[in-house]
Length: 453
Image (tube, rainbow, N blue to C red; front, side, top):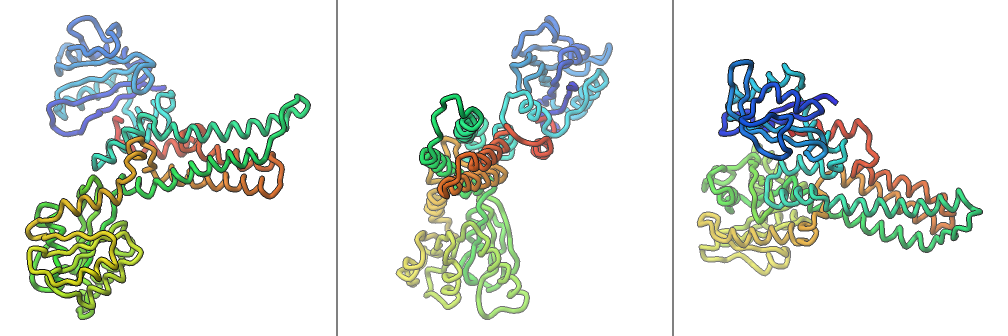
């Protein structure tokens, strides 16, 4: 393959910039433009940082630190050089031009990680986790991505894949060599094994409900009647004034969205228009947006003014929250409380008393969020949580094929008929790990990476 190069750090003025070079001519090309203080790039020891100068003929361009990695002990599995220069955009671009002039070419998006996958340094789950770690917005997401990079999720899928292959091998061996004295395949034992595999697949697929929230954030609707403190709550959570707060009812007529981490979970917060019967035309449109946002939300903060009795509007909001993951937020707890708490307790599992204006009670709200989404700490810490929609879709498809194989055997068909669905199930798992995936899918996955990774 071609020798590739790319700037691996941001294209902005910084203290340090890093350029990566990978391929069979990496040492040769870098040796043409880098003069080490002692020795040269070609003879330099692997993984040892060396001081040198990048030069263009007789003109020195920058003092740099270089690290050579000899194949296969590198990120890509190829000969590789990392050039640590000063973070001037001009210097970075000039070194890139020199590398290209001497035989390298600019890397495509994600090409370094793609080569790591193609050279067997990473499987596809681990490769995708690299991108997830770069994009991680919260600590939990980063920890999961790091665990996936280390092979936690890969081990789960590889075990399922191997078990499916073992079952199929036994079936095919018996069919292909009937006179070799092989023990007949017992359908009951097969069904038992397939049911265990099905349980594992469904457990992994179900983990996506939490994994998608950890990775993409929980779409969170802040709803309530006018003037209960929805905008004040948004501002209190964010720590700055994002939404206009006024005593005039109906101030918020459109949806205001912001992203924040709370309780270890990323919340895609949506401050919405207050829900009430008596509303003007524009406000009614805002309420329609509120209802739509609430319907699609992963989490709802139903805000009530604890200093007043429940209104018909409040009770309508309670009905709209039925079947949703919702937290009743009793605001203005610093005032004399007259709200019917029993009615609230009868309709909500999760309740918190706060004063958004005084920023009181937010810690309790944070604890509730953590318990709602991060309660399965064992799965999260082990990395056996799916955060990638592609993995989820393949896991669901694989479980459908396994279920079909079980149905076939339970209907009295011979194991060779079930073998077709078992093969398809294994193929779906292979698409997750990269054992059986098309070039098109590989190209699509790595095209989403940044250049230099």
